[in-house]
Length: 98
Image (cartoon, rainbow, N blue to C red; front, side, top):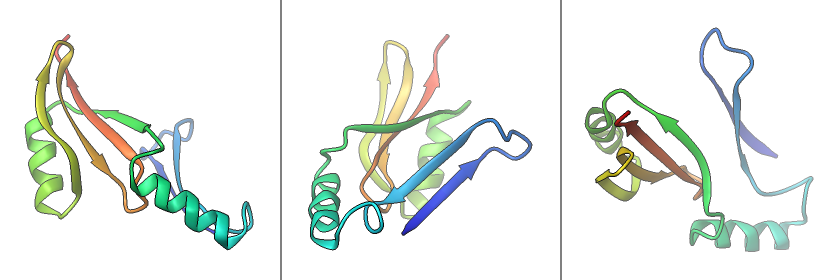
């Protein structure tokens, strides 16, 4: 089983667990099917983060080779973009306008 836990330094109350579907939760055939569906976007929205500067965050992540799934866009609530983690999970990053 593979996973990654992300935590803000000094804040043990908020963890994000990114998990690759597989054993022991499911057999390999099922895990392969689930990974294929997630890679196609079937999981929907997995996690969201806020930032003080969406453009800067977007440019830094893109420069590092992160897969951008939805380009930087101005919206009624602020500026946001979407990306995918290495397992295909959808993540949104937003700079709130209020």
